[in-house]
Image 1: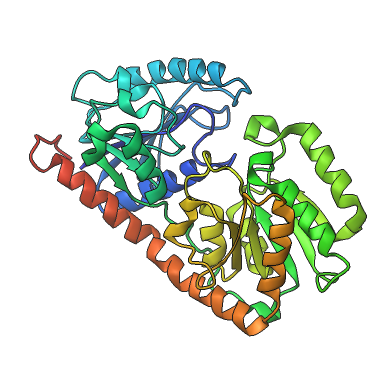
Image 2: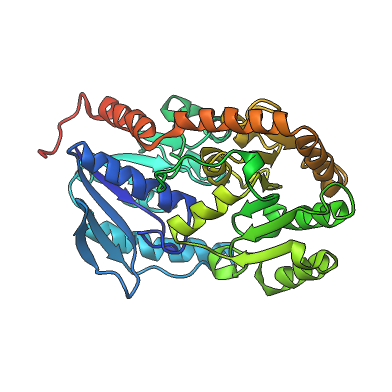
Amino acid sequence: MKITIVLGAFLPVPPVMGGAIEKSWFALAQEFVSRNHDVTIISRALPQFASYEIVDGVRHIRVRGSDTPRSLLWLKILDLFYSLRVRRVLPSADILVTNTFWLPLLVRDSSPGKIYVHVGRYPKGQMRLYGRAARLQTPSSDVADAVKREAPSSAYKVIAIPYPHPQIISAEAPLPLEKRAKIVLYVGRVHPEKGVHSLVEAFTRLRRSNFADWKLIIVGSTDSKEGGGGEDYFRQLQQSAAVARDRIVFRGPIFDAAALEEEFRAARIFAYPSLAARGETFGLAPLEAMTHGCAVLTSDLRCFRDFILPNETGFVFEGAAPDPADSLMAAFRDASSDPVRLERIARAGQLKSEEFSRARVADKFLADFESLTRDGQRTNC
């Protein structure tokens, strides 16, 4: 089967600037190639990458994109320019996976393949525009339900297939929690919608209690060009964290997979306090933390429910509480109150994460691709 994967205008592949969507489709492309499928990835060009190359069997075509702008209107305009450039280089294929706003509207013939829209963001009215798409695929059941509500006439086209957890690099099994330092870890964009300020506030309030000997490590970019909250937000976080002194550490972004894996494997608790009820769609970072044996604590957003069961595979706090930091404090106290229970839930989460391996997720995608192309004429591989 010939598969083309078109990623967005703002992040490159390989995912040297991060991005859950870019990481996931880059990994899936490699899995598809390992099963003898012909795969092309089209992504944003960067000076250090060739405009055309084949790496590990995956064909890469790169076209000019841009940094993420602050203005949503300008973002859509830049996406349009990018999509027009992409349209000119689309190869013939069976399946055209697209993560751009405009490309499903611009492709008017069948030669690039069945249009497979990856809905990697919470829908904001655009789903009803994609009548020509063969599939509207979401990473979680929550987003699938939102797409169906927005475009009921296309409900039969909607399917939820999750992101795969990143491949484990280390040959060693993760240490049990009791042998790890007392570290709470956050990995993600350092942005208000991620609730990082609530996390810092909760941790500073806990510093004089049984969390006095714990450390909070925050990994992620504050740069607005990389989806962060910008310098003003970072200064606000630093001011709030000052009372905890060296107990709160801002690492900055870590894009090296091996180095990031070390951060996960050093932590006991992974906290992901996202408050983005209409922005969060899956939660790849919590899933990655579960893979490495962390006990995971998230907000109660519906998108996490596909893999986090409260008090079974993770811990949950009320993100919409009048004081989210207070709710988060209570969840931290609950999680740390019983080390045996903490270890049990971490292990249950690690077991649950195995359902999201690259191979298992690829099985689901390939079965769905096959179902869409079974009765149509295919391009020869």
